[in-house]
Amino acid sequence: MNSTPEESDAITLEPIGHVACARSELVDDNWGDVTAVIKLDPERYGKAALFGLEDFSHLEVVFHFHRVPLDKIQIGARHPRNNNEWPLVGIFAQRGKNRPNRLGVSRCELIEVKETEIHVRGLDAVDGTPVLDIKPYMSEFAPRGTTKQPQWSVELMGEYY
Image (cartoon, rainbow, N blue to C red; front, side, top):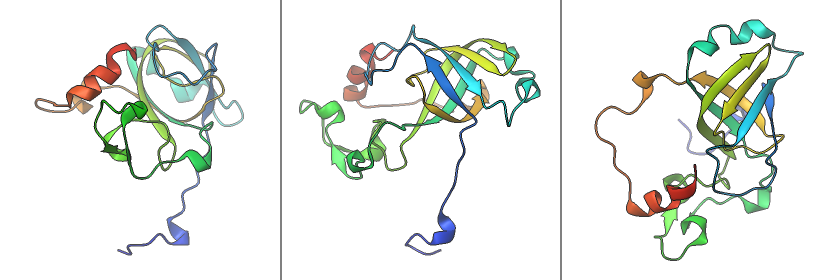
């Protein structure tokens, strides 16, 4: 495999829908009670695309951090949230929004499905966010075995939800 990207390596993604919610500010914390509606693109998806989704309690949502300017993308290391009390870690060792491909992945609670709208709680995406994919959360896809994480990440997430 080549070590440099080729033109054929380019990926084009089209949003399947967008987030509608009252939260439009890019704030890092207090997402737990935020409710939102993922509105599928009605030109491409009918209600059949969501059949059976209501049988799940939680979803995994892949979305695009569309409001992160290209010149703010980070590819090296930084202190999470620019907090010098936390260690310098690479962009792939944290979940910051200024990622190379500006992709977000979130797990949220499914409240209800109405036609082509998915009502959720705890989705950490602002109003207008393009949604790239939705998957039902299945516990069998959770990590197997004991997980570990550094103390700084526990502190960072303390008020996230």
